[in-house]
Structure formats: C-alpha cells, structure tokens
Length: 84
Length: 84
Length: 150
Length: 150
Image (tube, rainbow over all chains, first blue to last red; front, side, top):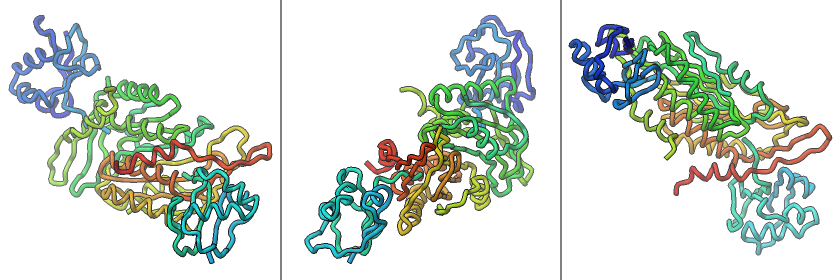
C-alpha cells in the first residue's frame, strides 16, 4: 500500500488530501503512476491533464517521470512550487 | 590660486590638511601636478612616491594622470578609498 | 551553519540578524532578504499551503548546500505558512560573512532555491470573493539553474 | 528614487526598510546590506575620514546611477563617518522592488561602488597603541568593474 498526498489545486481537483491504495504491480515509474491515476476519476484526469504542471515527490524526494518507484510509502503530487 | 586638499596618510605624510598655491603655468595635467608637488618637501615626496597608491579628484570629480587641469578651484589628493 | 525554521507567526528580522552577528567576531558583512505579500489593489490575503513531511527537511537541505558552498558564511532562513495579509513578511533569509560577496551570494542562492525547491503553494484571496493559486514563474527556475555546475 | 545620507550617528536598519516598503504597494522583495566594524581581537576603534565637499555628492551620484539601472527599485544608502567601535554598523544599503533579482542587484551594485568610489578612508586603532590606515582591496575594484558595460 502507498499513500498518495495531494497539494494546492491538484488536491482541490482530485477532491482529496490523500488516498491510500495498492498500486498494480506493473507500475514501475512516476510517469506510469500518473497515467494510471488519471483513469481513476474525472477529477484525477482533470488534475493530471497537463503533465508539464505536475511535480512529484517519492518519499519526500523530488522525482522525475522516469524515476523508478520501488516500494515507496508516500508519493506526493502537486503543482510547481510557489514559495519564497 | 588653487586649493590642494589631502586625506588619510597623504595628509599625514605631507603634514597639512590643505594648502593654497599658485601653480606654474606649464602644469597642465594631473601627472604633471604630482611631479611638481613631489619636489616641494620631503614629506610631499614621500607621500607621492608610489603613484599607483595615489588618487586625485579635480573640483570633486575623480581624475586620471592624463586629465587636463584647466583652472580648478580645488584638487584633492588621497589614497585609494576604503569606505563601505 | 545556516539554520532553517518554518512557522506561522511573524519574525523579527533585526533580532535574527543581531543573533547571527553576535555569534562571531570576524563578520564584516550582513545581507538580509525579506519577501513580502504585495499590497496589490483588491488582494485580501495570501495563504501558504505546504507539505509538512517535506518542507522543513527541504529547507534544511538547501541551507546545508549553501553552508557547504560558502563555508565562512552563517545564516538563518525562516519561511512562514498559513494565512498572511498584504504587506506581511513571508520569508526571511539573513546571512553574515567576513566577505561581502559571500553574504550576498549565499542569500541570493538561498532565495532562488527556496522559490523553486521548497514545497509551498500560494493562494490569493481577492476582494470580489474569488481566489486563485499563484502560478510558478519561469524566471524563478532560471534563477535557480544558474547555480548548477555547468 | 534612492536616497543617500551621511551621518555620524547609528542608523535603525529595520526602520529604514519599513519606511521604504510603506512607500509603494507593489514591493514584494526587500534586500538589506549592513557593513560592520569587525570585532577583530585587539581592535579598539575604526575611524572613518571622508572628503566633505565630495562624499555626499558622490553617494548621490551612485544612488542615481542605480536608480537609472533598476527603475522599479527604491532604496536608501546611509554611510557613517567618525570613530566607530568594533561591532558597530558602518554602512547600510536597503532596497525594495517588485522583483527579487532587482533588489539584490541594486544593493550589490551600490555596495561595490560605495567601496570603490565614495571618498572614505578607514583608520584602525589597536590595543597596543598602534594605528594603521586600511589598505584598499583589489577585489573591491574587480567587484565594481563587473558593472561596467563591456
């Protein structure tokens, strides 16, 4: 099981702060995870429609689309950061 | 007549804050002024011995050795600045 | 050593700098950056959401990176979260060094990376009742990338 | 507008920045540089001599140059003269801008030029009774030259 956490408008469009799921075994990269997540609901699809505006952290480390997933405990999905 | 003003160790080595002088007519550049001044006393000579450490402002504008003198009212002679 | 703090309450920039400067006797240069909520006409508030499990760790990683690049330089970074009003300070970076160029460079580096790597998101509330998430600026990514080795 | 002041008394950096920020509503970035008398072991005092007829005019010229280069940026520069004790502030450059990079660049530019163009000379008094004039640093001239157009 992995906990997915969402922030900012990704959170609002998906309609949840987080969800805990079992990922299909064939999902081995960040890009594959996003493709699969986008099929889960219209909200997921809308939130993830423009991948250039999606950032991912796997177990609190920034990841890229090709980052292998391994067995993470927490994957965060969010827009580009706007702090500072 | 022109007023020469001195600062920092130039002032200390010459032994005066300022002096008001008539410059010989043939002195037409900053470099010529320094050459002439260095002959006025051992203190002047010592203060002006290393020209790479001498800066000059003519009527409150920074000058270079080749700056023409014109008819200035005030010429300042000092070491490289160390403010800030 | 560059310390990092995450908090909702305001900070006292002068006190932070004074604490930094009192730590060593060889500090001739102190630089401070303060990021503020702009008082744009019609802006009611700015809310900073963040990723609790990651934010402070990421700030500390950025701080450690700066301390390694400029070992003679010390500093403090403070980032607020929660709801802030126009004119309020959001972020403070304060550095001190024997060398002016290092104090400036470390502060600039820290801000560039806080803008692009610290997981905060700003949401604006407007007087007409609308709200919107602030979009990331491409210029911030370019500013951060300048610090990468070629 | 970047104002310049020359004074013997200390300054309140936080108050100077607050005054600057209150002037406009579009300022999201404030940068402050403070130059301090280093508390080197055995240093009793630092005396800043200056060229009264030229100093403030030169500071104002540097300020006007910075304001022309970064027209969206406002600021204040304050330089002290006279006898200062270890740890005391010597110079303050405070800038504010809608753009962080401009606030940083203007402050850095102002310091580089104050170091090389403002007619001040520092003399150190040491505990053993000796005194010496501080020598200019080549690095300061290089720092200032980077701003010259190629």
